[in-house]
Amino acid sequence: MTAAAGPLGRVVESDGRAIKLRTGYQLAPDANALIIINRLAFPDRHGVLEEKARRPLLRWAADTRLGQDADLVRDVAARRARMLDDLRAAGQAVIRLRAEPEWRLAVGLGNRANPHEIGLALHGSYGWPVIPGSSLKGLAAAWATASGIPDADIRRVLGSPRPSRPAATAGSTTGRDRPPVRGDQGRGTVSFLDAIPAGEPASVAVDVLTPHVKPYYDSMAGGHRRPRVPPAEYHNPVPLNFLTVSGAFAVDLYGPDGRDTGLAAGWLTAAGDEFGAGAKTAAGYGYLTLTRLDDAEAGA
Figure 1 (cartoon, rainbow, N blue to C red):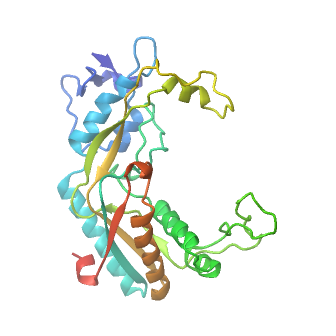
Figure 2: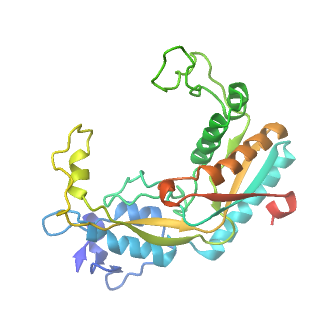
Figure 3: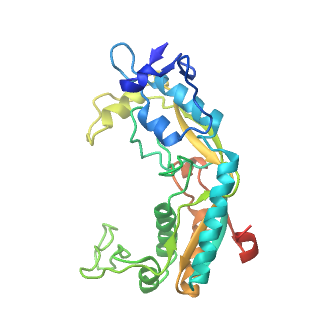
């Protein structure tokens, strides 16, 4: 058995396959995943965090669905619905979309603020999987820009400063965006809330990526222009596990102008299907089917 690092080692240990609590303690299935993943580390006797030390955490995340309790998920969904009703009563235009991944989502893989570098977007209070509102807004902005929507409309709906489209100057071959115009700052008319599980716990699965030339990729890390280790067939493949989620999410947008809120919802709906959200879209992750719900369905 390997004890967790730090004070938690007096309570938590791992046998290399699962997380266990010492006699007299019990790890509840609805434990906050943000705390479990960010606070637990299982170093070997030399103090090294090996890839295999992540497996108990990943297994716990999948077995408990990142600590999602079905009753609590429904309560939080009902609380969100009541908040949307309050926004409508205050004169805000509210649109709810139901987002369902065509396969799986890998949102937040780059956010590895934990010892074992397990990347996944988790709710800051509940520890449940979410799609951050900032990611949804960026997705809508990317589609609107790529689709030729006028810059004035994008800035009005999503705020500014925003990068402009590539400058159409003679002889320009860089393809880089023009920098934002100084003084062009403003809040957009539409707000994007974090997408939360739509009344039922999201499914959590452990997926695997297997680089075949890991020493080469490692040697290129840190911005090195030339690899210190060339790619070669004799390198051993090294499986790397990561977390993915699936299931329905509630996507909520609101703002004072119903037309602008509708525009943002339309951009996001098209972007989810065409661009996908999160990482590894080239491998089929992240593509979303977004369906607009009417007021009766949104409050259900």
